[in-house]
Amino acid sequence: MMLAFLAPVLQVLPSDDKGRIGLSLAIPVAANIGGIGTPIGTPPNATAVRFLTESGYEVTFSEWSVRMIPYVLIMILVAWVLLQLLFPFKTKKLVLDIPANKRPVDWKTYVVWITFVGTILLWATESLTGINSNVVALIPLGVLTMTGIFTKEDIKEINWTVLWLVAGGFALGTALQGTGLAKTLINAIPFGSMSVLSVLIIAGLVCYFLSNFISNSATAALLIPILIVVAEGMADPAATNNASFLSFGGTHAMISFIAVCASIAMLFPISTPPNAIASSTGLVNTKDMAKVGIVIGAIGFTLGFFWLTKIFPFATI
Image (cartoon, rainbow, N blue to C red; front, top):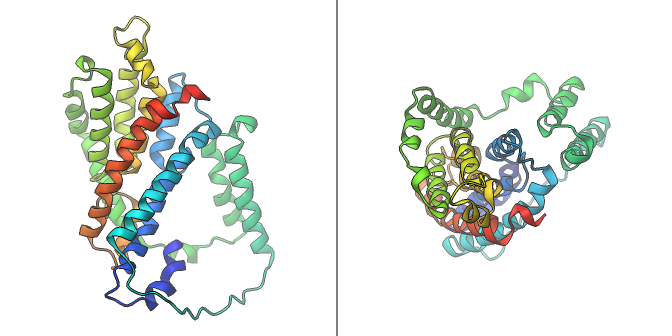
């Protein structure tokens, strides 16, 4: 949607203006980072919240958002500065000729707005209503299909090329899980004999690395159950590293940090759906995407670690 909004600007900019690349990359970078802000913003978040809840560490929609939205705002600012430094605009002035939208406001407009606002309110008040965010996510699909606003013709407009690209990442992740190769590789890491700091950093790096090559959803679904067990062991009052583990934020910090590591992995077109969509425009080269992705990943990893373990751990709410 946002790339479509930018189409008139991208068409006017000269082909040799680096600002075109920065502008095209701004959308997927912001989408990847922005998804961290809420439990339903990206699949790893939902996976983290689900496993935390199942293990007795409940995290509400508002608790996650209050903590993560400031992190998102900081990372968006970092990305904005980075893109301007790497891809400065040569063009100083643009004149856009965009025809006015003459579509009349009708009942469909009001249905979409009411559904949009209602869905967000239900997500934000999950702790009050008791309605699971996954259930709320089905409301727009139900309402828009029942009213005929979303039809089979809209399905034909979906960019299936991008979906096949993303599906490749899912397929690779499923194959790694199904064959047991991924679990074997992760179990080979001796988490039990490591210090708490080493466990957090190595687990985060493993998650970041895998998420760049396979679906971040598959990575989170693979790593989090294993790390939940590791975290419960370290959280045991009888454990020798219990005090150290709690000083780093405990189970909440570990699992939420892993979710963040999955979301900031954006080196290649296959890494995330927003990256795949941006790549499909033909305006972004993989090397440019990787250049931005590695810097965002390094800064996001470091900030996310200190943010969730020391600056703003869950225990402060």
